[in-house]
Image: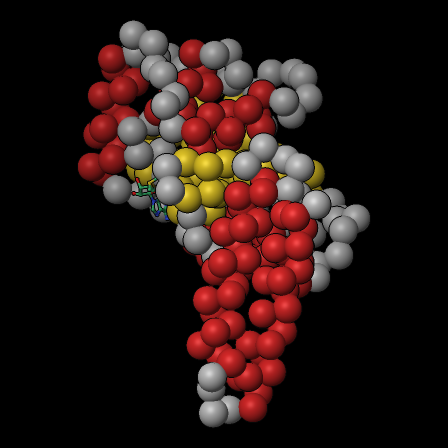
Length: 234
Ligand SMILES: C[S@@+](CC[C@H](N)C(=O)[O-])C[C@H]1O[C@@H](n2cnc3c(N)ncnc32)[C@H](O)[C@@H]1O
């Protein structure tokens, strides 16, 4: 059975691994759930091997079903693990970590507890708090070498490919709000519009606050929203 990737988010994650240079690749998929990404990666020969992990036994049982139906037992190993805790050392041949469909703060926490995260490439797709993840990456010496936007249903997500290295871009407000995504990228305009709307909403509450400091913060956020909107107009 061939596993199809209907999920656009996961398809972009797979693409960011596929386009990451040549050579043999193998990935740990953290929070694998149904192991759809893991199955796709090996069936498309993007990875020769995937360790598909989840903290919960139930999703791992769904993953087992996918692996069995696709007859991929020899290429996908299922692991019950909180983040990468079950891998005190880098699994042999592992070149990539994928963390998709989790909050940005959880992804940062998972990477911070992994001693070998700086020796591989990570593909990260935060559902929330992308700004917190960007800040953590920057402060911990990881650079985003490519970032894409991806509309999936009602939402537009940021997906980043990250390596150890000194970022050549500043960690300013614009970067934290929208990363390396620009309006000319696929789904980039939609991502910036969505981010601007969220910032506008956050600013609105602050601007009516009785506290002067909160109002000032609201003004700053409102300005950032205007800046992002302007980027979508060019
Ligand atoms: C929303 S699903 C995402 C599934 C898939 N990666 C995707 O992007 O579509 C999140 C999965 O992450 C798992 N998860 C949550 N916290 C985790 C952790 N600390 N370590 C490993 N897996 C975790 C959950 O059990 C769940 O299966």
